[in-house]
Image (tube, rainbow, N blue to C red):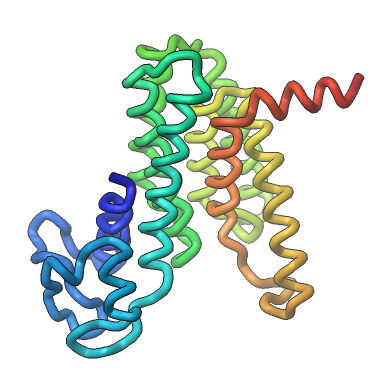
Length: 248
């Protein structure tokens, strides 16, 4: 299921960027020559391996990110299934379905921001609304917890955006902070933000040390926020418990 969805997400991300409506468009095509792909050239991972990473029609290279997104989506779906079957006390379908939706949104946010340094606005607001409804009506999250979380993250990023006039952080990251707060609540969002800044700092140091970026180079911070949100979703409580024990 994850491999198939990963293949679809690759197509959706490219068509979204090219402003092509996926509902009215034809089947998958090579983005180099626009040759329509046969079904046997569109099997997740398998087709890429057999084609040796090249289009059957124009022989140009298929970017490595396509099979990587397919593989990662499949791996994440396996992780979500394992978590709900083996880690949680009992399997609850709507909890699994919620995580499938959340993980899919995070993956799209990560890939799109990594490629184009842009956080998709309507996708984030969809995540905010869906997260609020699911957490409130199905999981019993308090409104106060979600609002405080959204205020902490969205407000923190919003202040940075206003002070720097958009130089330090983008408006998409502010909206993403609201989404994180709604999903995680105030305690979880603090964990997610800490992880995002830590991983972002480590990555920036590595890029500078290897001369792959300069001091003024833009870094897609939404990718690190997506990573932090994912880790906080599944390991946030354990991290908080470890930290409190460490302070003692």
